[in-house]
Length: 428
Image (cartoon, rainbow, N blue to C red; front, side, top):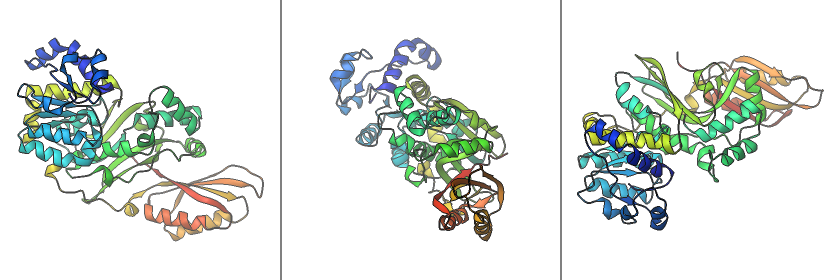
């Protein structure tokens, strides 16, 4: 095993405590023979593994007694180079490393095939939720038309506290950090990068294309204002950081994005609260399916890692990896839709002086862009005060909505830039 942090400790615990059960299920005894870490002194004193098997030399994993290497160290460098050495030595790899797969997945998958081994990666997306297995096996009969996921528990916890309890972003983030749901530096979570990496992996599998994490346009939750959450509630919506991948109707184009979205309160995804994750998958034959559970944490993630390990040991996973043509090393780059050409309903909030004629000017600009309104909301105010003017649109082209927002920002009574948030319409 490479790494002995939180997840690695959970893997070691499961292998130690459930060894007999795993032997019964696979017919083979699974033993942890070597652990490679940077800080050997800390690992040897942890009590998690036999100190004798701890090393800082990757070469110790290349011996003939090792059949599978579990990588739970994380990051792209230097771990990527270690994984390449392991694959070149003919070892199967089990990894929870979304960053590595989102950046170098196709190259690593191809290298595994060249060396007649496999890479198992269920734990890289959604912690303990078996969504990778579902896409690769359980839903194989389907053409997948859409994925909509809450793929970051930190963001979902923060948004839950803001929507359900009226907390500010700063207060909710601090609470998440105090409870261990957010890192001291939460940037990769709150800016959407973590969810984008997971979406790239899942969308590549679902659509049979090649998508890198850098291909996913991303907006985080760190700029969300409490007033937009309150207006969402008034209009019958919740706000979630959604990772969305959609096959455009009647086209080969694929749209991928991560951003805060309005979603109707009665949708199942809107009911996912706290640090939980969920993935909604729409297949042409099966319809709607949803996978829900703990998307992070020691034991949920260790559960996925060890399940993958047992799949490799039993032989079924290597056979599936080599026999099925699903991983992105065998696919062409995705034909990504231009973001300006995507279509959806939208929410716009404008801060404006409460003077006569403002609404007429706004509606004229929207009409000039062929955008029709579905709702208008404005609270009472005194004449001359700055007030929030909120509109929601029917389905509209994103580029047209952005162009309208830019023109609205130029109106004399408008203060600042309008806030534009997508309203998600879930497939039937």
